[in-house]
Length: 297
Image (tube, rainbow, N blue to C red):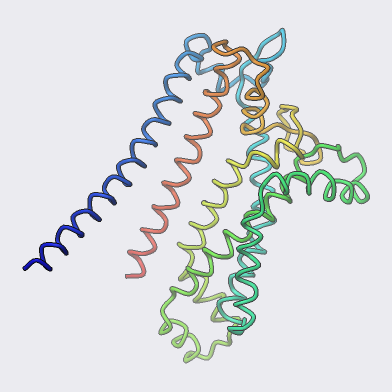
């Protein structure tokens, strides 16, 4: 009887501890959203939402002030798109190789290497892009700026490749063996099975991994702050300097902008836009995973 009582007490304590942990995470998220909304309200009380979303210039720190988010949004979308364009094929090929071709010994060597690559601090990637990628690209691309979106995008791509590869491999590994065997029974070779059965069956997980990688690329700060420059421009040319939303937040957060001013409140308006984008992408990722999970069941 005493043993059962102690066991129940232990289970209750564990339950309470887990409940507190979950509650803390929920309240932390609510607090972050509350701060963003409260501080952004002070900004939008002086700048209209229409001008914020449609003005093509972003110069809040200049004498002639414009508060259009489009140049920062354009720089963010550009670096994210180019990085995913590089990372997706490499990540997917690595996932297919690890899931279908690699021996257990090779897999044990490559998986830790990918985890190490994912654990490198982003500031290291930033200086790697600035001091190694950019000088080498300038040998082949005339007119490439010293600070440019292309070098930053390549560094971000290297950073998110492990995420795409790992999550895509999990999705590929979860495909039932019976589907593969059915493809082989119908006369498919391994490549035909991968293209015709494996990738379509794991598409939900692969798409979710890509969307999560896009969210990670959108929120990347140090790489773009160091390598992409701080020139907000409405341009889709990756050879030129751009400024992303996260890089602007870093620029204003250095301490030169007085607290409580309109310029100071711009970082919360930009942060709110960044939060909305990543939130929508995470919802889309979860929706895709659930939809394809139901379809598989």
